Length: 168
Image 1 (tube, rainbow, N blue to C red):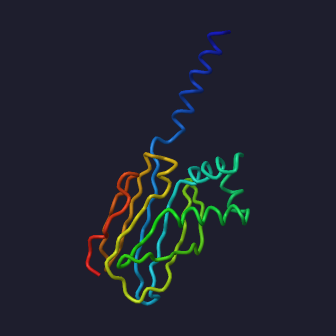
Image 2: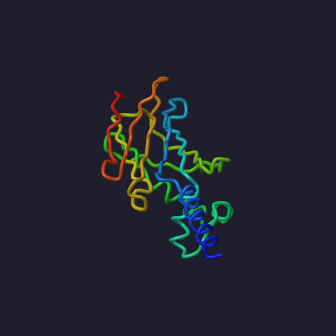
Image 3: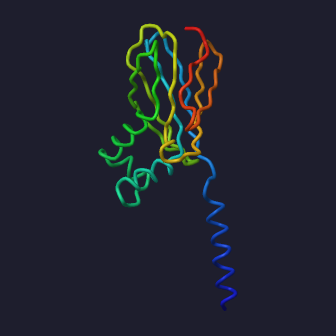
């Protein structure tokens, strides 16, 4: 009987280890739309990473469904996400707001964002420390689209601000 119990706990620990992901990743696609005179972006983040952080802050387990259905928690989440990146144009911060969100079947939470009005973008720098204070191994990627071309940058906790290497 003890052998069966030991085997059960060994298998359970292996199963639990297999369920945890070993890396943390956020991905943003960003593009400037001249007709709207604004940047628009989609940010994809693992939902359970965000739920974990809010659960720790509030001292109780919170599901992402509960967070999204509770106005105060959803607002806190949106503020946390928007504070996790900054686009600078000519060394001036560009402010974004959350236009919507979608929890997909893969457990990713997609945020749809738009910036304040920007008549024409200048030199761009992007800081992307999202979640690095909570997950030191967090990796973030930015895909900036301009005239159909992709410019992809990678960010780490130790390297989270980079100039977007294209001319305005």
